[in-house]
Length: 142
Image (cartoon, rainbow, N blue to C red; front, side, top):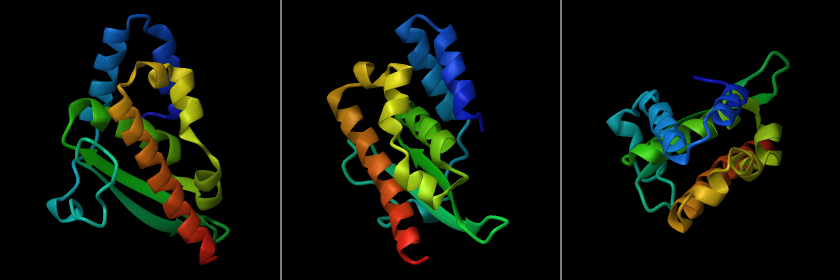
């Protein structure tokens, strides 16, 4: 999976928005599909027009602190790309970092905030809130 810094750099090289959308779709094609068993009500993200599933795993870092690993999928091509970007940003970070980091700033930096439909923007917000809520739940148990 590409690092978020690499995705940001790639976006800076692409001037045309149609090409940027194609790039987002290409990123989504790199996602490993979730197993059918992970496409369940527990993992389903509410508030998305498309079907979106996020799976959250917790592992410990070298100091025993919780790190969140996310996997995700969608039935819509562009949304799969947006999921990929969020996974690049959040997956593998400490629960504290995930809870504190608001991906809307990164989406604004990429210009996606201004170029997504209101429905997709709401869906992105729902995905972000779900990931951050999962981090807060983990932190509440530490």
